Length: 79
Image (cartoon, rainbow, N blue to C red; front, side, top):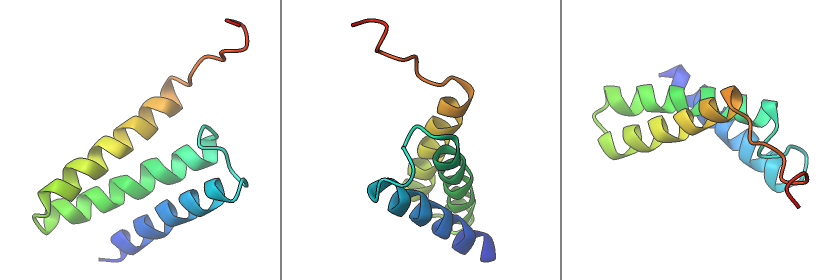
C-alpha cells in the first residue's frame, strides 16, 4: 500500500525537521505533514487490523487537525 509509505515519509520528515530546528511543531507545514501522514498510516493500520496503531494514528492526526483549526493562543500576553 503506497499510501502507507507516503504517510510514513511525511511523519518522518516532520519529526526530523522539528528535531533539527528547521520546523516548529506548531508551524503549519509540520502540522499538515503530521495530520496527513498519520491519517494515511491510520487507514493502513485499520485495513490490516492493527487496531492499537490505528487508534494511536487517529488520535495523533486528530490533534494535528485540531491544532490547524484552533491554533494555541500566545502566552506572551498573559505574562
